[in-house]
Image (cartoon, rainbow over all chains, first blue to last red):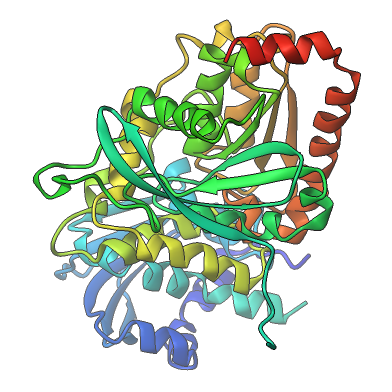
Length: 135
Length: 299
């Protein structure tokens, strides 16, 4: 199985997110009413994302910039590495499984996250496609 | 006529539950040992349609699945608009026993999933003598909650969408898309507050840890099967549960399955459930006639 080992590899995968979302017509269709500003922690790397009408309009790495966001989702490198495995192991296969086990945390007002829960679950899973394609 | 009919037949019945009349819908297929199937919280009996269309099952078992009141095609009782739906251990147990009695089912097998798996444990505690065998899918005496159930019924969040999204991760990645989305569709169709009301039993009222030791598997065989991808009722939850039961219980961890084995991947599930049903059938053949009579007498 292809294994992601480096933090740099994780961030490179995540930074492909805007293109992955736009290429997924079904996800964009389902997210048509989804608009949100969020922060995402991919291991040590912190990102600001603005989702507009189901697309990632802005994705910027921002180590220190104070900026408004509605909610944050932060996961350890191990969490994203296992979550993006082509066939994730039990308990590492779903964002809610990761929050239950404490490998991913949610902060802030998570109403937008919960309102569009399936959209966000599917969006954050998209880098898995890149890992699977390497096999 | 060119219609391709399935062997499943649906009917409506009136049942008195908790002193109130309920119009209950149920489906059945097959002949032989009664096998009553209990659906998961916030869903309905359609989850068992594949089992009911499986001749390997229906040639030996009369498979029945009812939609709980407030679910599927069963209506809430008159006056429901002035109350919040809440399922309790008592009301759930009464529902199953009353359904079996209304149809004169003799020594039925009961198989339940999730909340259905939990209540099967309570049937083993309180009514073991009434049943030929009990099968718990994704069953444990207690599980830790992993989200606030207030999300399930509020005006600013679509109830169907969030119920389906929350449970979607409980389906194994290997399950076919077709079955995954059919499973989720039932959650999207559920009435407002119904999933939440079911979870009152699961999270609050139905903690069976204090009573689990009362189960006597000599009185009624118990089979527990849990999918490896179920992180709501994880295999460890089931295994922990049986450690409290004297005499031990047959626990199977089902590979590449999650919380909805019978509907998320019917082909995979039958590999696990057919051997269990065979054992239950053989158990019947080995049982002395007077034992069966004794069970009839306790009804």
